[in-house]
Image (cartoon, rainbow, N blue to C red; front, side, top):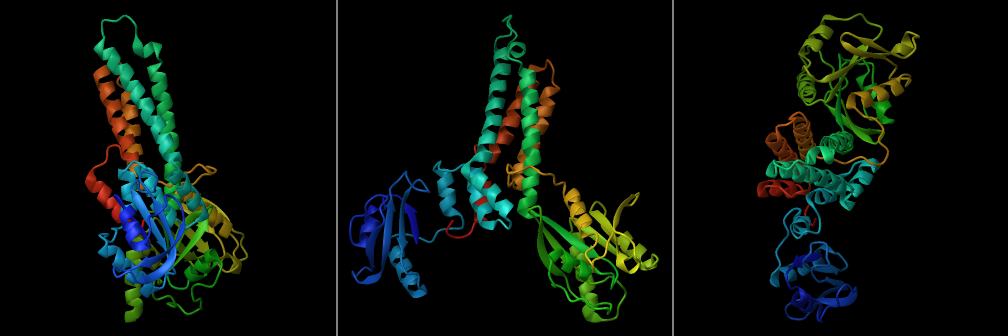
Length: 425
């Protein structure tokens, strides 16, 4: 159990029976108001500012039984504590200057990470690697603003501040840094949220077999009976550390079966939320009118890959073809031939390219801020001799960058960010 606040030495003395030693794990019997022992264990006291939150922190490590923990919690509340809100410990660390906002979000990202690559990226954010790169860009923007505003303040000086300081060369270098950071952040965002990949097609074209092949195990029931899959089945896989949420759906067809009809309605709901649609057809069959109807109903703007399945029954080799309508892959979900092609194609659609170990596990607000900063830097480069406009674009770019670490962040945004943390963090 962890308590954070101001002047907690009397609190620790009341519950542990003696004065606590700073940053020392000491055996203690935790006592109620009458002095009766509730439990025994270790008591640790971290006086401010040398704690995670920057405030006094007391940690009680007991045996952990539910009744014992409830009694201990009740004693803490008697002594003036209250239950923490979601993310409140990390929020206090941010408000007390122990973490910036990007590092604080790294705590939540580390807890929520679904792949090993996401864990490594979250740890880099938590350790401040992302924040350091943001600070470097921010400082570069501040230096350029100083040069431009000095030129505005002293127009009579013969010295051309901007030319002698290579201001536009430095601006171009900052643009390159922003573009690189945004690219790595986009890649890192994939590690964080992944892609929703929906398998779509008529009944019995091999959607469930493809799900099983991608998952590497029998997750979906496969039979020769059309309409076996009645509801959406989800399975998360990893390709190059990217989580892909594969969704097998009911085959699309006209039916009088009420259960199957509900499953088909849910299929269309999943299609509306898809990032990628895998459109399966049976390679042995000619295109049917129902295929055209399905194609017409698919949402515009969503990436789709057409898959000619069951090539093993035709004796054809797997392959990839680009057509006017998009990419067509030939494969066999049953034998696994061509699955490597599909994995590569999904990486391409995701926009993935190898970045080594320097990816940023970015959130959407980070991407928005970086895009905004880059836009203003590009506009600044086009101002030429309009120094007032150049200075303003640099100021706006700096504000966007500073939003990432929380230097310019509205209180309501902080409330939204930390409310998504789990209790106790």
